[in-house]
Image: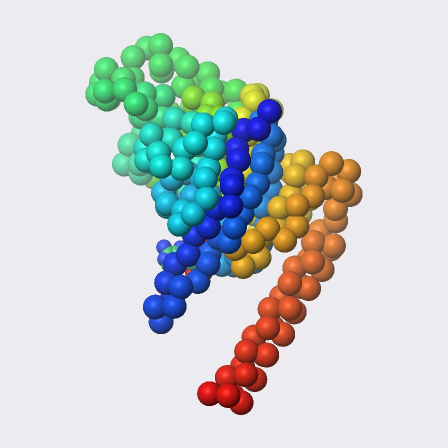
Amino acid sequence: MTALELQDVCKSYHNANGVPMQAVCSISLSIQRGAFVIIVGSNGSGKTTLLNLIAGSEQPDGGRILLDGKDITDLAEHRRAADIGRVFQDPFRGTVAGMSVEENLALAARRGQRFDLGFALDGKLREEIHERLASLHIGLEQRLRQPMATLSGGQRQVVTMLMATWHRPRLLLLDEHTAALDPQNAELVLSLTGRILSQGEMTVIMVTHSMKQAVHFGERLLMMHRGRITLDISGTEKLRAQPVELEKHFEELRREELLDESVAQLLREQYI
Ligand SMILES: Nc1ncnc2c1ncn2[C@@H]1O[C@H](COP(=O)(O)OP(=O)(O)OP(=O)(O)O)[C@@H](O)[C@H]1O
Ligand SMILES: [Mg+2]
């Protein structure tokens, strides 16, 4: 069953000189429910723009986006939020620094309801928050009353992950969510990612710059370049993929780009 479908989705922006450039070009894509899809690609290749379009924080110039068969292209971001969880690279983005760990989690648990912290943090919810944190076995349940600001980046990102998945959204978008962490914290957040995902039927799209992560995680791998998908592998092909092969593919794309640029430069020099 298809969870997410993109039909000929495009988005362009104007660069500093006012010239339009396509950040996402005619992307058509069908992702099965429960799939774990990895996206890699060079800087500026359109990965975040693609996630922005899916989440509704940007509107496409053309094409349609369907979630579980329902056309959500024109649905406002906040109306998609219950179905689409998101975690960003910046560990400070997903949580409120001045609020305690449990208050942050209560915010996620009570999303969409009228909110009053005193009321929101009743005994039952406190218990559930404690339980869910304790199940991660990293001791965060001991720090429930501490402000988020006292946690490490990795611990914050763990809480953000828990918040984004509290209500088991249909789709989870992870945009380089371990990139800003040191290796140890990145490992912690990654293992937690695996654990949270194994608990349910969520469909996940994870953007990463790490070729190691790209080959070890997920069952489908997409590579983006200049707003297009240049590689889409799954099954045994994905299982067999090696970081060095992906790097090679990257290098080829970069070489073509350099060639394109040098041809353009030559044309400019000779004809302008
Ligand atoms: N709001 C915006 N206004 C203008 N240009 C934008 C905007 N958002 C993205 N772009 C441009 O669109 C292109 C794709 O950007 P995007 O952020 O999607 O790339 P990315 O693949 O996520 O890169 P990175 O790996 O660096 O995060 C880039 O050229 C970028 O400068
Ligand atoms: Mg990005």
